[in-house]
Length: 340
Image (cartoon, rainbow, N blue to C red; front, side):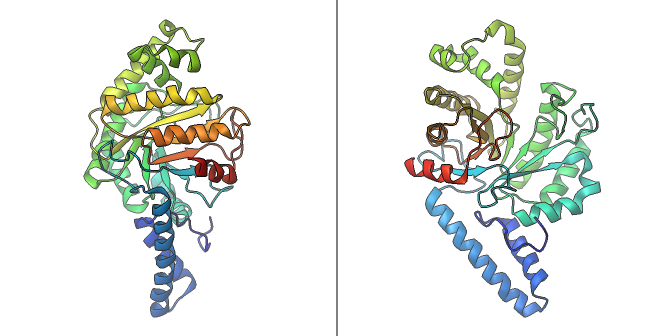
């Protein structure tokens, strides 16, 4: 979004909202007194929008409450990508290893978006994967600078994959290196009482859940053709990460990716989400949800999972039909939300 845009996303009040309103006011009204008045008007609009969002969702943004505090509350839904659907909250991304060189660009392009959630990962070059940071002290210092510069309305995500434009190229190290980096990030977030989450759990968490519970209905509906003995290494990696997440501060919340091809998968996935909450003693959200068939009832099913698991947020992916999932529109989300 251009710096002089008059379309900040004011769905959620946050520190970034106030900064956004001030910068917009300075951009359009050079007079100090008039600037203050214009900023008040913008903040009133933001506050009204925030109030309406709260009325519709009953969610406390950037909550640091225990994992069961969201029970019975209605989730807030977002849609990717922001360029197509700027009227719903969404996420953006910062590549931490090029933050210093691109700081002013990030501030201009992200702060003015009043972005809903912010992914923090690494920037890959060429076809070579990059390692997780070996220097956790430098990592924490850089992360502190990012947090002081950009505050999303809801939460930060410490990604477990780099920002890369070549398919199949991810980090060159395993789960222990990621968890070392994640624990360093947790120290920074804990000191600032800011909500943060892990890079979203994908298919391996389903293997892990089945290995822990032997939920045969789950296996039949989600991973019927998987030989569990052949994915033990992925189960072990997930177990390692889960045990790290159990030690996280109260500002942490679990993150899982959810995709449906059948409405019958909703109930077993809800059981899995509830199990993750109980195992880690932290809440859960979904920053990537999608459907594998052109069937709007699957959107309703995903919302059923979100509400049943007490998720404060669910972000749908992808509004432009990227990958294997079908496109999801704003209208479909609004219609499905009315049914929930």
